[in-house]
Image (cartoon, rainbow, N blue to C red; front, side, top):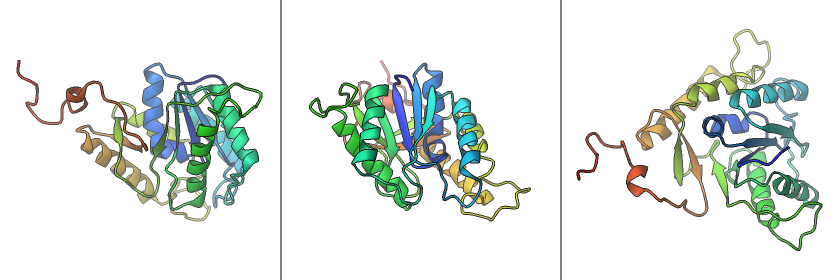
Length: 245
């Protein structure tokens, strides 16, 4: 792991790609450094194996252009969030020193997603305490940014991922064991149904429509982001909406 601008945490391999893959691909194209951390090996998944999912996750990270992707073992289906796990996340934050940390919204259908959001939020704060002694010096990123998974909430902002959408979908396609494959003989699951990826596509179009773009990814923050160009933030929303001078 090396220092990055954005650091994304997910409970399982493929969580981050589904909700924020376009944002990662866009950031990398703009010259930002992005790291990815999976807190579990996805060992409770109905399809595939931890070894297969690890290879798929590595392939997806390469598609997105992430600087690194690491995988922890906090327990899929029983994701642990005690002091030992918290300290590991603190050390990762202090080591990589990101400006922004991304995590699932800490209220979701899957308890592992909820626990990940809470664990990362608490570790984010503790990582900035000088008196909390670890091998590394304190560092607190500017904010924790939450991506949305099963439950939807009014977004704090939406990132235009139109130019990065094909890259996002190629990264998702790296998870051959998890999503629809007509040749697969493994049990059908909620995410292996062909309608699931259609939903991801529809969601991207919905969020894009909110900002007047073709595709978008939505995020929630507990504090609003600062805008330095209010007119630019709404640019292109209406036909003929350019300011007259």
